[in-house]
Length: 285
Image (cartoon, rainbow, N blue to C red; front, top):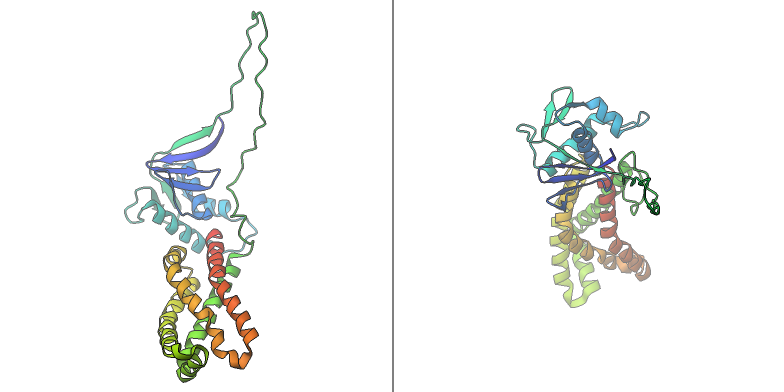
């Protein structure tokens, strides 16, 4: 038998080499740890895989982590992708206080090695032996995180993302608290368009307060669907952030035009930085 490279069940296919779950050939958005949980269950269908076995597989002995929370979060994400339910399971059954069991039937796809062709002793001419190509060793574990992302602790990414939301929240509250100053600064900066600019900043700051509070609370509570919700909000957030990227110009008379332009450049980068942090949080699951 060769090394197992894929598991198939119903319309799903788990590719161990790419650490990807596909449904009808379409790649599903599933982080590494939920995928590892799925593979552990697929390796032993109809058998109970204990929580302790999953802990040893997902986290080394010297790793300090809230295992119960991490495993529960991974299971929620896995069931969400599979369209499964804990109360009425189709694929994954919860065994109370013990572990989980995969209920479906699996098809194993193996990497079969090439069988050498035996030579006949009575052949008139010996056929040249088939060229052997070096086989790459099969990975003993699933691939690591996306190498294009910076390597850092997931909690650090969560902290930086939260701080970015707090920064925007301070911007919005300052504009609302001193709205008279915002009104005057809008006219000083934009001239005849000052009234329009003031209305835009006032309206977007009120919307922004609600959005940033949602993102802060979702990050603090480690909401498992934060990444997907953030993707939905991305177009509106990008528009919002670009408007407020120009906000340092409102106080250019106090901090200087050069410093204001530098602050604008930094704020233009912030939407891309936040998206990277979200991906780092997601890949660290």
